[in-house]
Image 1: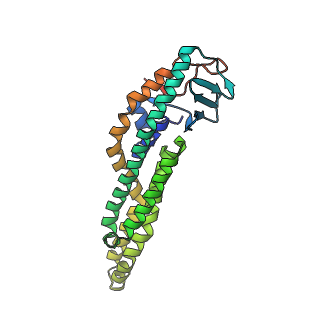
Image 2: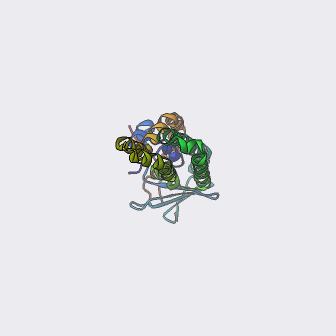
Image 3: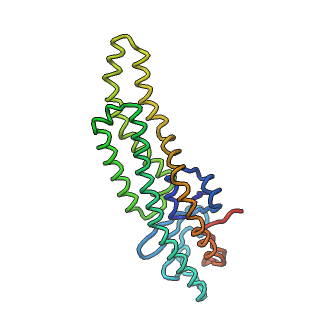
Length: 249
């Protein structure tokens, strides 16, 4: 089961928190992905019916079949959509800030591994370009697939992979000189510093992000539980309870 703080607040996973930690924080779960379109909210999953759920202006459709709703149920569906949409800018803000924090954390790693690359300005140029690209993708993304843990880890990997060649080049000449002078241990230590950023830097960056952003993710929990309450009693076109978000104990 895929867990997240809320469909669109899955951007909070950029904090690096594990699914188990976030489930513990808000005690909610879902098997659906959500796509936020201007005209509707679309929920989809591949395994169990209903596989597709659509909400728009108080109307509800599951697997292509319209659900007959009482007026009060129409009101709840409309309010669910409104409140879910209201979370979008909050989720994107968390994700965007997470990218900035990741870049700063990576830069801190680089300062230790290869200070020359930082002082030259080349590392900042590459970092800034990558951050701008990722933030554009987050701003344009409509689906939680763009904001979930796997996506955020991929973004972190992109940042680290961008700077690794710069760090390697920066210390390469110095390491070679040490080796030629007989200081093989010193040359190895320089290379190990760069390898540490490449191999362990992502985990350290994500740990820092979790500590910084987790409170903001947790602050969304009350709004998420309101969505759980609004879906209560709704049924799909087959008459079965519609569970888009599951609340734990």
